[in-house]
Image 1: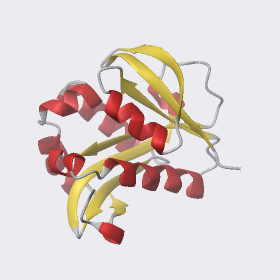
Image 2: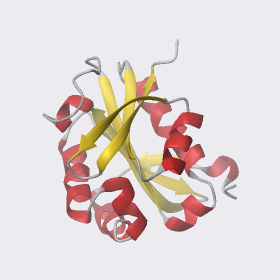
Image 3: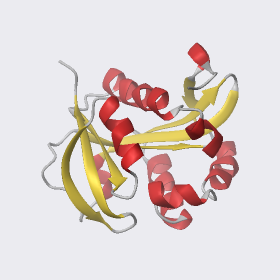
Length: 168
């Protein structure tokens, strides 16, 4: 488990963070989670260009160790599931290899979903997880997400659509 303890937090991402995020995307494991670096940067730019998106840096003990974003799922355009209700937000999480190994994902994922539900009118949060990443899918499950269906994502290939409805 992470040694960050209660000091794990999210802060708004700034333009100065782009170089750090780009460096994190060079981790080969990120291709399984985000697709190739160019498509990952395109998704990050899409989030950054949206006035309503939440773009956050994951902080652990005062150190930047990851990136997370959430935005209205409809921004992903065609080719994504039409079975999601309007008001569903898409989220994605990027952590350094060291922080993934230390178990930070199960702590960071609820932070971004919690912020979405606390600050927006989102009816649900959804994430795409490559079928090659069963451990990531299990992390989403532990955070309260449920498997909805398998989609063919242009960047990730076959992927589980994981959904968490707004808590009652």
